[in-house]
Image (cartoon, rainbow over all chains, first blue to last red):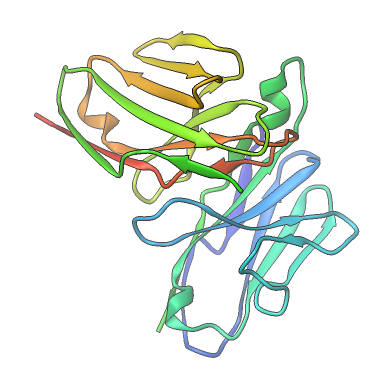
Length: 120
Length: 110
């Protein structure tokens, strides 16, 4: 497994500003992901953070709005740019591909505690 | 495309048994996960099925039929603390990429 921390845990921001969320893992991991979870909804994958190259974005998400960095195998950031109230959500970092003995070990994801963002 | 369906909400009584169903249509299959998520918390792993059949783990069991694209999570001896959202997720292509269903909110009442 992996221990994942996120900063900040919550924030209230003004419309038009940007917020950078940090995700730190206690061990080197191959795969890091960023999700959005809107109130009462399930998880929507924003992008896969790739170490040393540009992130891979899912349909409906663009780099200008959600720039992502991944400078090494234990750390990633997600920026929510030019925020509007529609960006109010929980943003979750997860890691996967840890590997091990079983197929599950390669497919399972572990989640950080999330960042609760409110945009006024 | 990927499609995962599960009921939006379920209610049950403390001590009872509840079954949460999940059907999926994905481009590939490398296993199905069930996660539990309490309000305001991160999802936590419950079970993983990659072969057909039933996996039992304490009060929780999970079943998979790959030919039918179907899974269920069975919760026995329900407790109040089991009130949570239950997320069905499929690994379509392996190497930890997951597609999540919309989640089933389970409410356990006394």
